[in-house]
Amino acid sequence: MDTIQKRILEEVADLHEVPEGAYNIRANGQSAGRRSTANIEITPKPEGNGIDVRIKPGTKRESVHIPVVLSESGLKETVYNDFYIGEDSDVVIVAGCGIHNCGSQDSQHDGIHRFFVGKNARVRYVEKHYGEGDGTGKRLLNPGTEVYMEENSVAEMEMVQIRGVDSTERVTTAELAAGAKLIVKERLMTHGSQTAVSLYKVNLNGAGANADVVSRSVARDDSYQKFDACISGNAPCHGHTECDSIIMDHGRILAVPSLEANHVDAELIHEAAIGKIAGEQLIKLMTLGLTEAEAEEQIINGFLR
Image 1 (cartoon, rainbow, N blue to C red):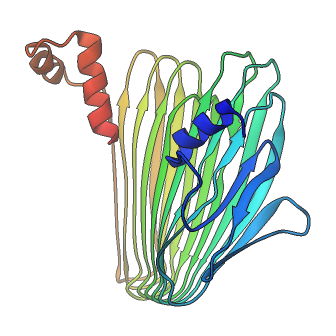
Image 2 (image 1 turned 120 degrees about the vertical axis):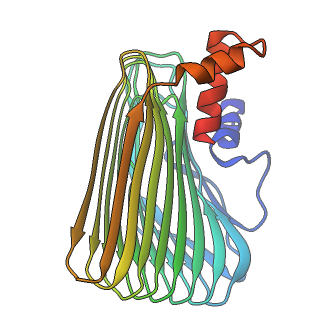
């Protein structure tokens, strides 16, 4: 990997060197390194357009890194990755995609991830998207995430996109069995003329299933965002979805939280708030010696943390 690719890898996966444990690094449509461990097996799909990750039952305190880097202008790809998380395991999966585009052609990565979470298993999934480059070509990222959760499993998902992506459509669906728990934390910032659409559809199918989907976002300049989340309660369950957004300049935000109760004991809550930075917050920080721009950045950084 060259210097640019290594820097992007650090941005999206916090990797300064080859990670410990299992990993699969993809650069410009090709494998740039792969390693399995005794408990985590990574195998390429026969078509060459993705991988299967199989985690043995009972695996604890292990991690998988699967970052993607694009530095070739005009490259467009769709990758399919499947994760089979064995019963009673507890693992961390770190994904993410970074695009460096200094050319005139659009660069695009669409990643379709499917998670099959076994009984009593726990997985923490971290996905970070990042774009850079001074070319006229766009940086496009369209992640699709499917989560299938068996009884009493837990999935924590952290979705982050802070900078440099011109257009993204993020589609996440989840099916939860009895006692399963899904936690989603989305952090998103758009600027310039960027667009970002986040779609969530969560089905709570078993007794005691629980979902908490929370998005925090900032829309700056002339950018546009849409947050569309639907939680369906099909059993005695609890679901919560929340969108909390800061709008700046000429940004636009559409929040569409929705709930569907199909059982008398389904407890479902949605919240949505969109507003500008409060003037008293700016004044307080400016009295401490910050400029208005510096105060705004401090507030935004704290909001998206």
